[in-house]
Length: 483
Ligand SMILES: Cc1cc2nc3c(=O)[nH]c(=O)nc-3n(C[C@H](O)[C@H](O)[C@H](O)COP(=O)(O)OP(=O)(O)OC[C@H]3O[C@@H](n4cnc5c(N)ncnc54)[C@H](O)[C@@H]3O)c2cc1C
Image (cartoon, rainbow, N blue to C red):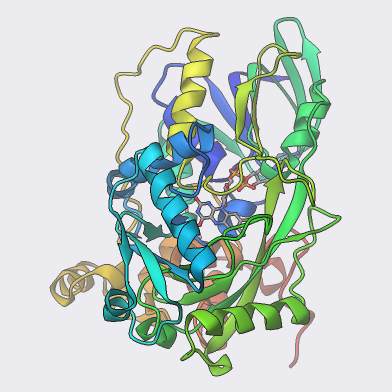
């Protein structure tokens, strides 16, 4: 029996979920199919989480237009979705005269792209912002921001779910065939059909496109490794610091990003790899990252490192090629009804909502879109206690004492927040699911303190130890009983 929908979205990253959130406004049936056991487990959860201003992108490109538009609306969007966001500003630092020319070029790009809040700073002004910074001059962008990409994607998805979108997690799309006027899709052992298929599969968008009959694309995976530094490091790097970009490096260069919650990231590298699953961290590249980072900020030391992670860019340009790969967002010329999102690399997070609006426009050209009377764009999720004032927290504890019990000491996450994460609307019940929703285990001790407490809470919630999964089915954190 086919499950029939007007629209199927393949991929539950930030972009797929932004599309689900935006299309949920209309009176149509929508399903989102995601191969992972949760949303935001692909590239959307493995990046710098910067809301870019739009001065890095080629003037006239789709990337530039959607990035600037995304930047302008991001703060309001985060308020609507109760997602942590900070307009941090950012410095792009020059080390020599060639870099100074690059900064002038970025100012000019920014002007052409419609960015505001850009200015050139001399060393005195730079050092007023960050005392111990390297370099001979910088460009300051006041409109750059940082945010929490996990909560952003999760709240987009939960809002879409509340507005009637069906989410199918652990549903890998394995076959697509054309059927009269639409598509038949096999996914997670079930059969689906739809009129319009939206291909938002990130690194795998070329494969989804080929499955549907359009074989023109090839995505080249380009790995970006990161160090995560303890929150103490943010006293030295209170705002993101980037080097002036160099052509042909495949990214914006190794930068320091002060995250929404105060950690500092060093990275990413830019290495073309053979596999789209090559997420390993490698000692040589990590060493190189640290050496580049201390040129930007000599006061960093290795004792600040608390972790590593890796993201992979879905590049349309092969290694060594110098042409520019813009986002491809269009209906396939070969397969009517298939809407592609291909090559959605940085600034894909920043641009996710304008991308979703563009998709709504493309869908409207195919089917009528009538607004629902009961659509609710605001989504609150649950209180995030670490951002509350002591008075606000006090009131919460009065209503529920579990808000007064800290379970994750590094990140100050309470028992109430972990229980709510465990009882999430998408039905995700894994350690990683809790981590991505509330940050428990993300601190300096890497879960040394809270992990066993979380496991106890999962057991109290009815799970047997052997049924507790780390990330996915069959992925238990426990090997057996010790006593
Ligand atoms: C190192 C790095 C740094 C970055 N920094 C920034 C930044 O600071 N700011 C910014 O704006 N952007 C940044 N980006 C870009 C940004 O992360 C991406 O553009 C964005 O996350 C893309 O979202 P997506 O939803 O298209 O892809 P994804 O998040 O990868 O989602 C695609 C989803 O499709 C699913 N999928 C794939 N195949 C199938 C299948 N067969 N069946 C079902 N599901 C499938 C995947 O599991 C995945 O969940 C960065 C990217 C990288 C790699």
